[in-house]
Image (cartoon, rainbow, N blue to C red; front, side, top):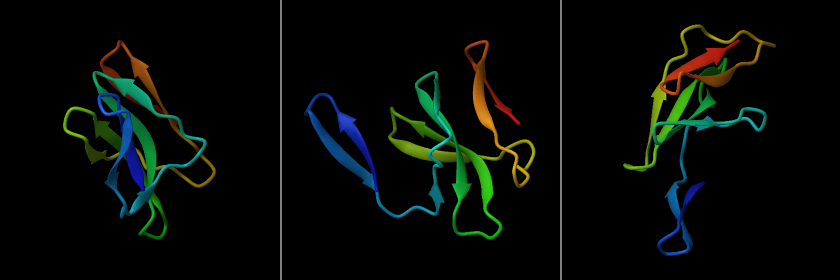
Length: 91
């Protein structure tokens, strides 16, 4: 289940419950221009596929973006912010 905190009502709201992806504990998100990005994993497929998951706070919608190169087993990635406007997956 995914929830968002609304400061105007001082309460949590549920955004969704059923997803085919998950966020690993060791991947941290990064925010750029009002959106937050994570490395996420497609749970429904074998082998699991990793991708960039973004959340737009203005629309409260998730969107997926492909990684430029697939992650190999045992290799992890993280997202860094460059020049305030560019995301760079680092392997």
